Image (tube, one colour):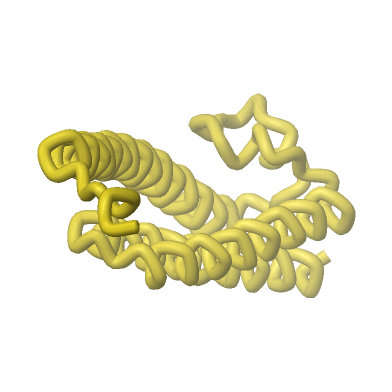
Length: 153
């Protein structure tokens, strides 16, 4: 039983590290969005997708090996949770602390993701305005300077 708990603790710690990587990528992506660095924003989107897939795989492994559903890591743990029934009392404070930190990071990730989506929406709106402006400028120039190419014939 102790080896299983140690494995669970290791997996939870690894999960925290990967969540930290995801948060760092989202924060960098936000800076890239604000700087209108489209190429790097696209690169970071791919990197974020890879890390998200890794998180899903880790959660699946935790579920498969320990029977702990994801929702158990998303809510406040108490003595009635499924998770508590499987963990010896001596390990409970450590596991609770790890899962609490996972929840905190998850909240930060969702907040950062919402900020990135908002920044992308603003950036897209500005780019559309610029494109409309350029398009209107071309139309005005074309209307004002109609070259008569056929007159020289």
